[in-house]
Length: 171
Image (cartoon, rainbow, N blue to C red; front, side):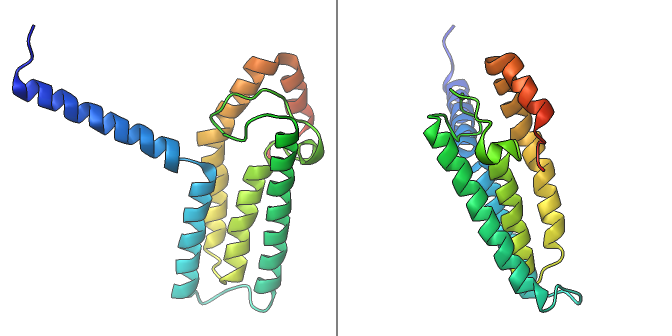
């Protein structure tokens, strides 16, 4: 059956829409992109102001959270690179990394993202940012972590199950 011009145009438009959606997911739907967006929102909240804040403790707490976040994420990436496995949350892992910061938390990079959101909240004196940090925990669990853990279980079986049982997802 031949397609009429309108049908062909509609099919082409739908394909372009699907392609655009796939590109957005590939390039924008990363945990760090969500965390960066959260930091921007927190900066705006800080600029707007809030009657109650963190006072003189805010900058120190913010700096401490920032240093801890960068250390955690850096150590996690370094440990994964040493094991020659992917840091891509939708990628296929080639090794189960359970040592170093992965012995403390199954998700040290996501934990670092949360700490970055906390750092921004403290630094910009934006208590509502704490809600964004909590929202990021939910988002990371739903959009990324569940799928990652399913892949790890499929690939590494009992070894992954043992790690899941002995190491907390967050802390």
